[in-house]
Length: 308
Image (cartoon, rainbow, N blue to C red; front, top):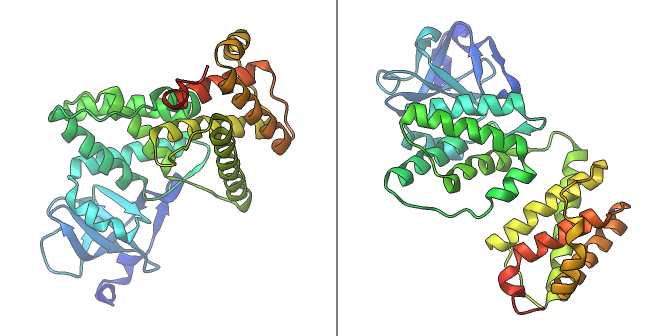
């Protein structure tokens, strides 16, 4: 094994921060493979591989020991499939993404994948490139993300300011919301209970989508933005119902208007609400029903435009 040529002191003594993403080293490390000029793969005391950033790490003999004073940042638990991606990312973007991942780990209540820094770096690098090239990418989920993932949305706001200061680029809202979605996509489940809850949520979303298709006589593409919008709201609603939280949106006053102006959509919304009540042993009042109907209409407006 290549790391056997490094001294034992170079392969022990690591402590981890929240989320086990960033490694705080103490003495020295053993480099076993170069990724690019400023990044390389190292081994820890248990033989696990991690990525480190530092000036000119890609040069020199391998294996060799590197003092911790030369290491600027380290990543633990990165998926080996992402190593090729790391080689294409600049050190500045990786460092910024690592700091943002640290913030997310300490700010959010759920566990995040160690791959989050690379996921964020990949998205941010291309978002900056697209913005500088005046390429507009439409992500029609801004409102839904803000409502359903408020904490992640706030982190996104801080990221936008940081990107502006660090890279002199102001991301448009359509690009910036992708940062919040990148964080959400890296959520992992710390217990069997969490995993089971996720399975229940996804099953309910699929069952409710079938109700929408049946009631509105439409076919919903599971890869469409319309479906993504609907699924985002359903995850938020189901999560709140499971823990007994209820929304105050001011939508109850619109229920008679919806029933009169959009009877098919209103009936669909009520059918979905009835199904959720039965499945989760919960009660959806007029406020929740109106809010749900509004989301059904908003998500599938193009398909339901002819149904009065």
